[in-house]
Image (cartoon, rainbow, N blue to C red; front, side, top):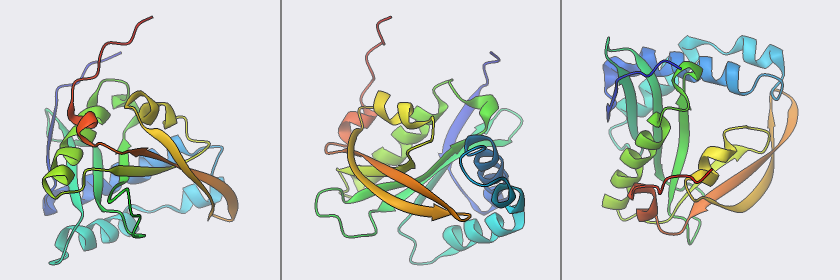
Length: 185
């Protein structure tokens, strides 16, 4: 496996195209076989660029976005989050998107993205966080390794497919920014 030198930083407007590319490519690799192929094929960089332009230019923005950038300056991953939108009494913060190109997974970059966002949400007094993930997503193990507890489940529909989403929660987001003990084999 090739190790990449990657830095994590706050996203800016010049990152929109890179974020959109990672968003589309990650959906296509992560959800292949879970979400209908025609839906994945129709995902467009332009639609995602428009979405991320809206997020990053919103003057009342409450979402925070961080990118993972490799040495040549290419965006290889991103994370987004902010206040939990449904008014959950306990879980006041939410990771609403985290995606990493398949070539950069399994190297600790996702964890570094989570640490960056969780640190910012804690600064904003959001100390209990959740993330929604498709039940069929193999990345669920990532949240379990970070100490996420399975807290909710709901039906959703994407591209005409009826799917189950599950939420992982952290009642104390500080545990996300503390070093993880080594895994025993």
